[in-house]
Length: 295
Image (cartoon, rainbow, N blue to C red; front, side):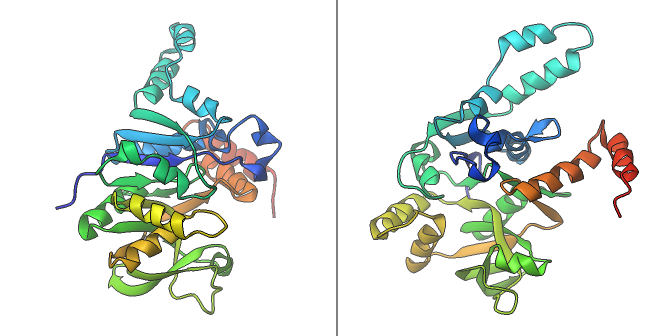
C-alpha cells in the first residue's frame, strides 16, 4: 500500500536570465500573475491536495520568496484597521498554509540537484516535485491531485504531462515512449527530447510535476557518478531507476491548461488569460481588451 504523500519540493534557485533585467533583483518565481506571485499559485495547489511540508530550494538571491511566506507583523499591524480585514486575513493565510523549509542549492548545475539537496527532509517518504515557474490549471481535480492518484495506482515514479495539441509542441518538449496503459498513461521505456511531430513516440509531452519514491536519491547519486560533463538532470536518474528494473509511468493531466511562466511570451499570455478570469477585475479587464479592437 502506498504511503500518503504530504511532502513536496519546489526548486527555485535559477537566475531567470530570460527575464533580465527584471529578475536582477526579483526572483522569476515572484513575478506576479495579476496580484499573486507564480510560486504562491503553485503552493496553493500543493496545499489543496493535502501537502503540509514544502521545501523550497533557493539561492542567495531568492530571499524575497522566504519573506513572502513568512509572517510580516509590521504589515499585519498596518492592516488592523477598518476596511482592511480581508487583506489582513489573506496575508495571515499565506504564512500559515504549510510548514515551509528553505535550503540553499548546493552541488552541480542541473534540475536533479535541488531534489537531492532535500533528501534529509524527505526521509523515507514519497514526495511531489513542482517547478517554481510553471503550473497547470486543471478541473475538477488539480494537477497535484491527479499525480497523487496516479502514484496511488502504480506506486512508481510518476511524470506529469500534457497532450500535445500544436505542432511546435513536438519541438519544445520531451515525449514519453512506452507501453500504453490505457486512459492516456504510459509505462515509460524512453524519454525522447524534441522528437518532432513526425517521429514522436506519443502525444504525451512531459512538462510539469512529478512524484518520486525516496529511491530517487540513490539514483541521482549514481547519475552523478556516471556524469562526465554537463548538467545533473533528473531524466538521467530516472534512466538509472529503469536500468534497475523499476517502472516509471507518465500520465496526462486531464482537463489541464499548461502555463509556462519561465518563457517571456508565455508569461505575457498567462497574465492576459488569467487576468480576464480574475474574480474582481476580470470583467472590467475583458472590456478593456475588447476596446483595443485587436483584429
